[in-house]
Image 1: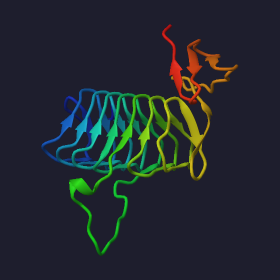
Image 2: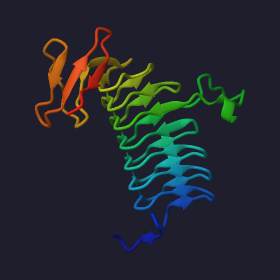
Image 3: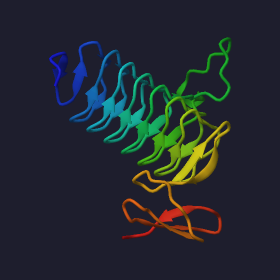
Image 4: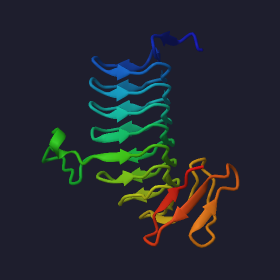
Length: 200
């Protein structure tokens, strides 16, 4: 642990600003130049890289990794085990105008990132969308609609290009079923195209 880290139930670098009241779980690390606003909730064992901003009333689950230069604006919810790559962007207002302020909680369209999802570097997530469990958003993608569970999406606008196992390996379907080459988990794809993991 760096001598510049201050010991609490969580670790915050001396340059980080943590407004009170806020809730930060045990084992979480907050690095250089971060700002956590009052009433934010951050779970246990999270890592917030340099220059991360967390707005009021944002909720972050356990074991979430947020890389450098990411801002979590009000209305964003990250469930457990989410990964946010460097400089990816969340929005939170559908119709922003400088001359017409829209900064009340009811103005914000919620964005939900479900358990285990990955968002690649420089991706943009338009507010009001949900990224499904273990969804995988490629670097530089612009997400304008919901991402199904386990789906790999990339491009502008992002489209489904395949599916990934919960361990991150791309799945190769044979008909309606697939087995992960790395961890052995099995998956089924429905006629509607949705993918579900089968019980071991």
